[in-house]
Image (cartoon, rainbow, N blue to C red; front, side):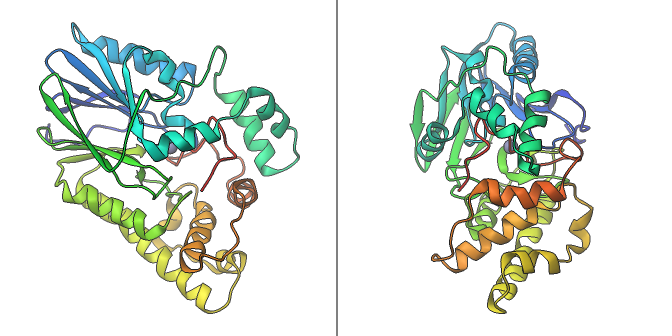
Length: 333
Ligand SMILES: [Zn+2]
């Protein structure tokens, strides 16, 4: 493959047995997945956000698998848009980092609780209402990974090596990237967003930067982000630059004694302002403040999201973005 695939919905062949399932527009709840074909086995990386998206992916996987069996699933992290479709792979090994499994157990919410949250007259409440109306959870239930690991793990998928590398805590506590060296492909999960603003739930931001460096160390040909178009390594640097910029800005604001809200309102994103979901910068500023000052009181995710979502109001679906609709939207760092 010489050209990058277009950012259109469906399965795209990346060469070397690797495919990317892309889910535009890549906004809240619209995540990418990966499919790796070995001689007689298939690995799926991330299983989509709901029954409809998950079923579409599963049909595409079965279509490309031919005689091969789908033996293995990896969940890159604990956000629901990356593992809610696990129930469509029961019987396969489902693998995630130990920290990710811990977050999954703590995070998901019962549908009744979601409906209750949606009644709140807040941006967060409206977001939950939008999520309930937009995504299909009829017949859904959480299916947790069957295996966990920490640091790293090598898989052999029908003769093809896939390296799991834990790079969290970063976006979440237990982020994992999946590297297929023979194909020069890295599936990055949500430590990489392309063409939209990244969001840092767990942090620290310095580890988000280190996670991007770890992707580049793999010297990949192409990188599949958690949300947005497939990119070359040079484009990973653009996201790294955003974090550098944000870290420097928020560090200066913290030194100047500004509150996160004051810092956020003074923020000029410059070239990054064109990315959808720019208001995620508020959550990212909070992550920097926590990194600089461990005593800085944690802001509960619904409270932080109130700012992020209010500024993003009406554009939750638009543009590529984090898609951080959990089975449990309340969970965070
Ligand atoms: Zn995501």
